[in-house]
Length: 394
Image (cartoon, rainbow, N blue to C red; front, side, top):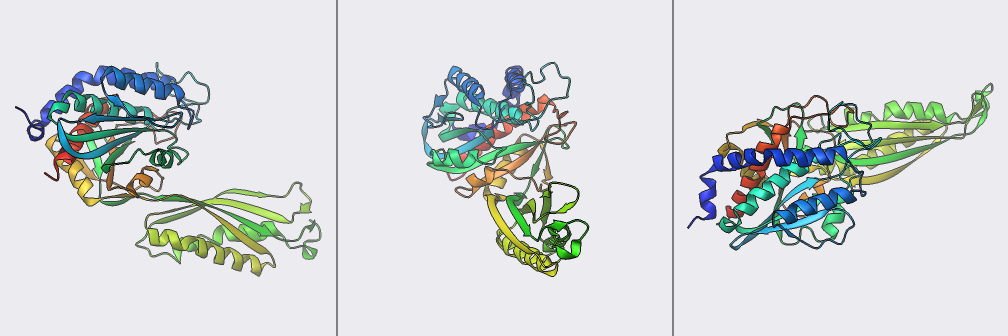
């Protein structure tokens, strides 16, 4: 009788079976691409994923959420539970690819490739289900809504999606990497994402008599440049960080100095210690600069997503599977973008990888495309990764 261990010796089998599945996975991905749905609105996407899984005989688990899917594949013997995660939401972007299966929903597009992630993990699920009699333990499947809002992972966790799970694996397509290549690294891969608002209080007056006013626009302009020292002079050059002001609002007309200026921005960091210190750093800099102009500043901080931080043992599991499949492995280049996969990693060890897709544009671009043949190594890699993760403690 075959055992789960036998599957480790047959990596070609995963790729060959994934190639056979490719037309089905490609068509499913294109169907999602034609009909993208925004965060927490993925009703039809959820229905389609459930129907696909049910047709394959994969068990759907109860999930007290209007969108999102939780499913599980049980092996023939007792063992651990590992999870594979895909995100399912699209973006408010008008598609400009000209593809025959381009979005028909005005102002909505899968411009970040979540349709690809979903189809690839569905492919892995089919492969695992077909060999379930050889598996030890269980594979949990998470199809998560609202990644783009950074809220979906928390909702899934609160709904019990990680109960009993010992490790989790996920991916993001990487346009600049060719198909058949993955980006893999231990430690921080994607940045934490936090927001802040700075209100600068001055004294309004006539634009022709600035000496009788305290101009908050001038003070706020100085703060925009000054807070960059939170990175260049307050953060070690060996720690990566980004501070960006993305919104500046003040005044209502051309000849009146306003009372208040408001700045909105984001901070991206990769280490918890740096993240922890940033609110105080920005507050001190903003207060000091404002005081120099006779104004006052107040800072509000909005904690968001932590950094994606890959566990060494989970990375090794993916590396072994990729090597068995003869995929090219390159050191993953970290991104200052955020990913709420990090919330899962706060609960259980996990690994998030870059999956090469030979794309044409960067994420969120209206002409974003990818090479669908990446579905083949994507499905095979995550199926074999799950198998090896289940066998790891034997």
